[in-house]
Image: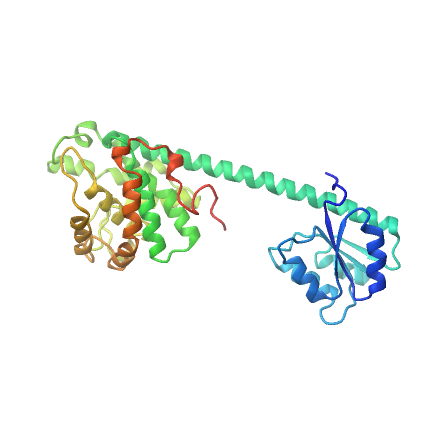
Length: 364
């Protein structure tokens, strides 16, 4: 891909005005040019709102020399990809090797040949354009794959919810509640992303529970309750064991979200911090939504009753350290409750996009 005339910006860095003038005469008929007479100014321009597409950089300058400028550019994620060509009177092989080792793409010695400068600039701009286009395509494809995986996860979760929930909106609300509690608890952005995107699979194991138990219009007897207790292990088996971070989290949430802080939960009877943090958060989110939701065998609780129940369960059912984050998240959780109410019918998955967490793969 050849650059369009005047579409690319070249930053000329040299402390000698005559050298700047020569380069500018050669390049300005073909490209936009900017000028820096020292390394500090060059770095400021490169980090500005409109960074250059290529930098021609002198080595011997007062203050920060060209080698240090290049080193700083390559150490910064914002500027590391900008191609740098050294233009210098230092013509020893060792000098050229050092410049290339620092990340420069080329090395031109003074006095310059206009034809060589134009040819080298044209070549490296074309390569830079190609690399940016390839990076753009890879990024778009990565997002497509990520979103496809998310749709599969959500629809597996919805398959379970549709068996005992009229609309399946529970998984949408649940994932948002997890996100909000995780944010209030101070989890990092990447962890919140994983939590939000893995939690829809929390009850996928219900697929393996017999209809007479799962769809019973009334309380379960002891035998039926023991059958229902198998769904976390079934869910973990459905998800399987993977190295993928998202699927690992989904498996943990599915397996452990019915564990209790005091060890009286199921299926493993884990206690305290032995229960994975994401599962502890999911436990609060799941109970909060279940108590507020109309079911054939129960009327919905009020918000006040539900909050009081969760607060009373601190240290027995729930992680006591998550109660305050739950309180802080509560106003936004109530907004989500209304936005994705079952009375609005089954909502499309695209309506469940959480701010800053979907549509973008987690960053490493």
